[in-house]
Amino acid sequence: MSPNIPNLVYILVIGVLFATGVTLLLERSLTRVLMGVILLGNGANLLLLTGGRAGGPPIVGTSAQEDMADPLPQAMVLTAIVITLGMTAFLLALAYRSWHLNGHDEVQDDVEDRRIMELADRDEGPGTADADADTADGGPADGSPEARVLAEAEGGR
Image 1 (cartoon, rainbow, N blue to C red):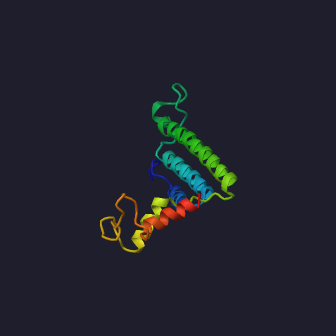
Image 2 (image 1 turned 60 degrees about the horizontal axis):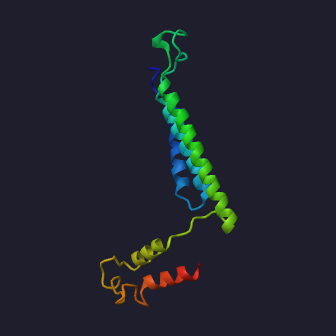
Image 3 (image 1 turned 180 degrees about the vertical axis):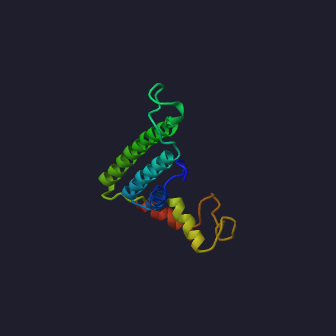
């Protein structure tokens, strides 16, 4: 077996970290999104480390050039750690602010997202006659789904 082939356990751990991280990123809670970013960062670090060659320290004069470890994956892992730390700090501040203002850390639907979901539930696209039934001033008609969504959004503020 060649020393450059990664261990099967490393590959499985990387796959589990990536799968769990992506699953958590798709959640509504900012705490779970934060955990997903951390797991993705750790999976990326392991993936980068498996690409390197094991060996002696990459310092000239300490070992033969053929026996030295590849320094590029190590530098990339350090960069990935810094990026993950920055994203973690930003998401942690965002989750704390959301918890402080709203009492929860869930991301709410956007008004436009709700309008599109309602049109999709009624199986209407933007080019259908019901969706284009706007008033003369360019705003949505009073009975249209757009008007109801806008009224709900304005009432919730």
